[in-house]
Length: 202
Length: 244
Image (cartoon, rainbow over all chains, first blue to last red; front, side, top):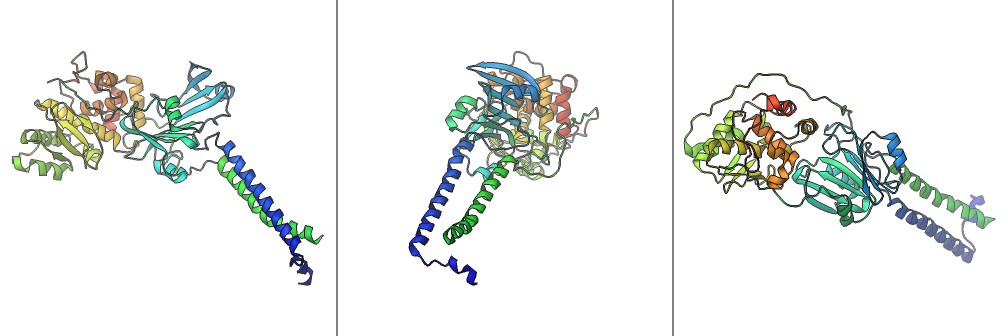
């Protein structure tokens, strides 16, 4: 025991100095962790095994080399849209949009098989990200009851069925605001409400 | 020397968990968190039915007018609100007509509310009102639109796997919509082609003899022959519902 006696502080000013130094060290470490976060938020988190790109990192050359492209469209303002070969949904295929050579958006169709590893429901995202930041009801593709759930600060939007909770599409973009997402990538949103089908002339 | 040892001991305690935490976060970021069991192949081929067999269609038993609403609820699990005797009887007959298919596996629990003539829409699933169906004066029209609106319930209130949603999307991509409405839904009612074509597929699969078409917006009056002209759509409907 005697050999550890030096751990017991005898010189109070020195002990206080050590404590202050340690506190400074802890603060520095916390600052390092805190400062790392804004960099992380530039890219949405890894969401699905079906994800083919990393927003802000993957470039056009990698897309053209590694993915099966069905259609390539120049959108203007340095943007290029790639529609990919998709077995799940040929009506609205997986998509990647590139701006100035870097990916800014990815759309992933989610399989319907409930035992598929990438099948996912809304509850998964609620558990992972918390309450959804914005919900827009109505889809131009899937109908007036289908919703877009937007986690804009995470760079994630989901097109989903609120009744079955099934996620039809995951969309990834650079974290921003819901308004910016809707303006840039929310072309499927259609908030015109339930359709009144004046179907047949009598 | 003592001071230095002191600092080193304390630092080792403080720094190592912090580093571990940082590494743990990196590890979570680099690995997908989604974990599921099973691994069904995505490229499952649709089950193609070549069966030409028709199901055995049942005739509705004759029951008193006053018993219709209760009998529909009891027999088919469908609640019908605000309808008069005539429309209740037509619904009773149509429901019996499709009762040998799997139709009610998907729509049981729906509530159908009578709307003013010509206003029909799906507004929900199995809580509150599911669909509004207009009180059309023509029996064939009423039965066709009744099934069309419940076709929306099949699409929106059941898991996509149950209704072979991807097979349907591929059918739509290849054959386009089965009616004018299924191809021009936005022009017709501000709706969308995918949703309306699915409902039209169900409606015409279960009403193959009808001479009607969604004519309000359509330039022609030819009802679709699913079996002959839209075999992929027909197969999806046949898979979902069984033989009609």
